[in-house]
Image (cartoon, rainbow, N blue to C red; front, top):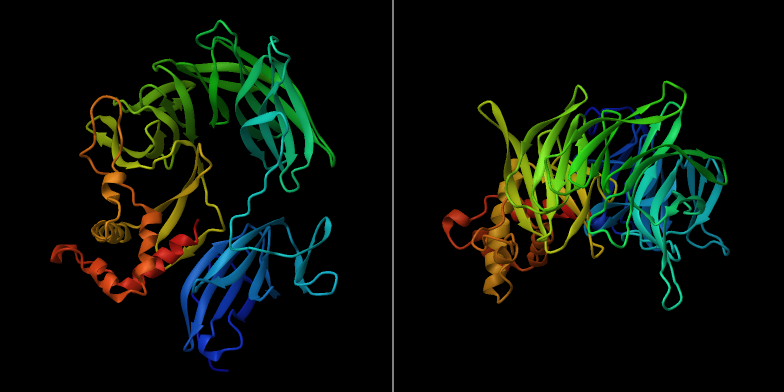
Length: 535
């Protein structure tokens, strides 16, 4: 039998194969894909055209081997991929798209269409069978879980128990003239059904400020930071860092205090460093070690750093701790021999609201002026310096960075880009930070410039001026444009002009010969469509 086409070598062995046409009934619109489920939880996809396998892409849906089943959902041809997580593959906007389902460890799937269950699917997992149908699988699914009088402040996931722990503050309404009763609590929910499995009440007047989950050989634990606010206090002077031991059965999660440590201030943030816990308490960082040699857990303070004004955010990676000072800037520390050493710090007035390490030498953060910024660690003789290599006006207050992506991560060999971080803002916006290869970043920088000039000439807004970093305190940066970031939403507006040859030519040519783009319009379209699939 002659060989028609061959795939490249994969990082793991194939588990399942499916040659599938996502557009049926019209040979001219035929769109045949070769889908390969791998044993490491990835799916490799190829476009099969003219006896060639083109446009290789990889997407991960977990860590278990992937099986696939073709199905029809409504009027759409689709493929159901099952592994440690489940996803729907479908054809939309001239490209293959992936939509995750909130189901885990599915072992088998089949299409089901009866009078009782029209256009449905049936899934099998370790708990039994799940019957259901899928609607709007090209949209982000948002589900609200009402908590009553409990106001959620922090949330963390505990993978070993498959639960979410939510720190809440409850204000019980009082009669006119009486003081309101304020009490904090920890609520625990199943990470799939969101059924409430347990709760733990804090002491009277205590409010939780941060959560950190960790697992040891003896079980799963939740570290909680809490502050006690008194009416006459101008600054928090009493707080507590304590560890909850968590045990679970099929119906509930029980929590009990394993160890506790009182601090003189508000513990704003927690992070894990070298199997220890670092807490930001007012102006200092305190590192605690969990001692279990005696059989009981004991929290011991082993290191402190007190060279800041108000530390409200922490991030860690290995033995490195990044701290954000809300009324100053950022510092990078290293925990070595049970001591904290300064690696480098920024001495500018930045007013950070949250920070995150993207590597051992790079970081991203946001400040109270609605700006994003990035720094990288540079060597200068015998010293190391933090050099700002990105600054960008987002227009919203970011309060959390989280490594990862919104959907199953797609990697295209033709569009070198990698999702790095998600960010969350005070008005409910969820955004993605995507890392681009250097040559692609240069091409898209030119596209953003030309697109901005074209839209501005059509009596549109001045994009360059709008994204200029803002600074309402001290020196004005009105004349300094953004750098280090590209506006993905703005770049995707290029797709609106694909069907307009005249506008497309003006954007590609720019205002002068040096501004003419060397990348083709087809290549730009493909890159932007890949970018769209990541958010």
